[in-house]
Length: 144
Image (tube, rainbow, N blue to C red; front, side, top):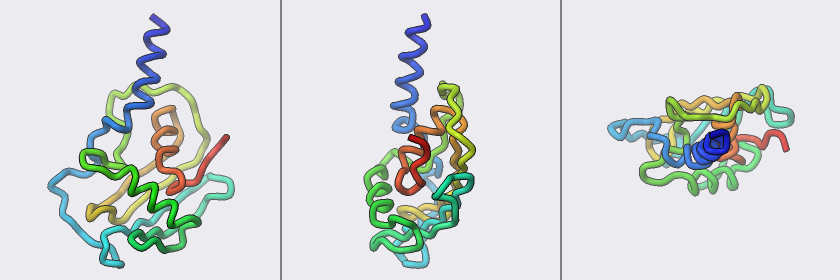
């Protein structure tokens, strides 16, 4: 029974972000950022050694005050696909490991792929840690 729970928890942790519902409804209006591309984000990171701050990230072309704009844009492009929202929250009822990844928090606002973004990130359990780590280098690498 314990082994089954561990396997199910591991599967949820790994597959959960790929099965998450969109954080933004499909009927959300299409908007554009200041660059006109629709790809402009403001990323606020706190309680992260060496990565705390407020960064602007523009993509297509990569620009802004983000420490690694090209790599961050490439990461967002790689995780953005139909039916999968890169900023989606952890689904309600998800089984998450009880691991605390530290006090780091992040808030991303703006426009991505023509849709508004307003997403909060933390590292309070295994699901949230995986969600954060899935967006590195958009968000800074934390821990080992």
